[in-house]
Length: 42
Image (cartoon, rainbow, N blue to C red; front, top):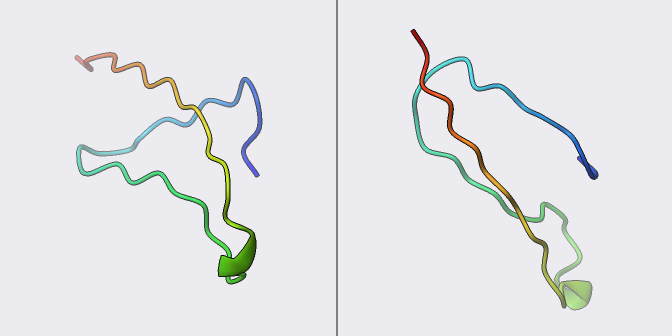
């Protein structure tokens, strides 16, 4: 679980995949919200 207020810095450019990763498909109701901020490097 990442949680609220967590920042992750990408080390290189590429595709960003966001999803729930579990093996119990019977309880995958609901969803999550994500805010992505892109700050160009030098």
